[in-house]
Image 1 (spheres, rainbow, N blue to C red):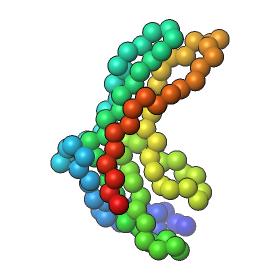
Image 2 (cartoon, rainbow, N blue to C red):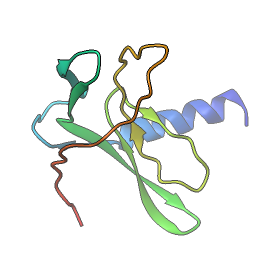
Image 3 (cartoon, rainbow, N blue to C red):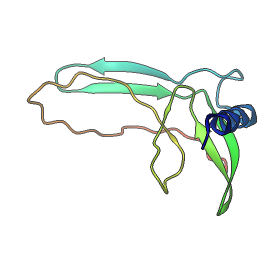
Length: 110
């Protein structure tokens, strides 16, 4: 694919994106906040005030690309095109770490 095709595809996706308001009518980045942290426990809160939704055609029919502002696409073949959101934390060298999701709030749009 040449550079002009890539540029046109990128521009067409950018202009077709629709901001979905989950708390902010203007496009803003997701927020991350350290709620508490000590040597054994770190609690992080993610707030997603909205996301971009872009309609695309696939061989299986219409689909949406979901993009959180400043999120990172997973780029996994066959997987939904959803963004990954992250927050860096410090983990001690000899730590035996695991994680647990304590609470999830979401809205269903189906």
